[in-house]
Length: 217
Image 1 (cartoon, rainbow, N blue to C red):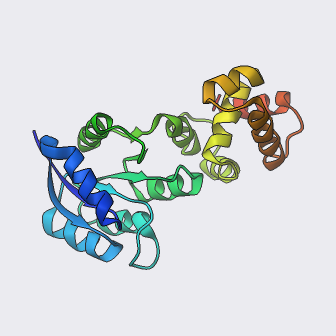
Image 2 (tube, helix red, strand yellow):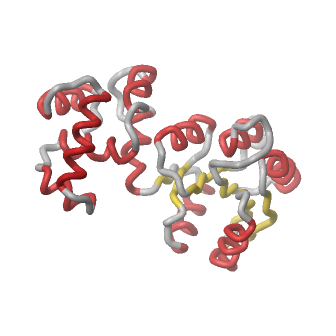
């Protein structure tokens, strides 16, 4: 089945390139470049999936999250997959809280994007690998602490800092962590220092206990 898709992004060149890459794998029924035109287009075409940039002009300044909030209550059959160059925690959290079913970065390969669109159309949640653990943990799907507490504390960390925190809590050495994330040991040390400071912890032991208490190891 060819899924009916709307592409929303404020860069025409990106929309054109994305449409060409998707080819006949999906049926692109329209494109929009801002919040207001996106809402009108989604209302008119009622696509199965909206491929949605996070940062968009128009509306009241809420970007992609605003599009989701305005459309989901009216068009419950339409699902939203966010796509962005950003892997910033605040961007991920805002659009998922609004009701998007997934979030991928623009480095995703074409086959993986086509697969993600299909999964979202079927009702599954899809995230880029390095965001998945963070999103699931931040929204409490694994149980543990109350949403308010976990969101407040995890939102202090960048996506990369969350990755580092989880691996440290799992017992990775700095060298192993550097190899896993393709960064230098010095960069690992910098991230760990920032994580400890932001969470007001003093050691790896305390960090591990903090993560275990929240079931996010």
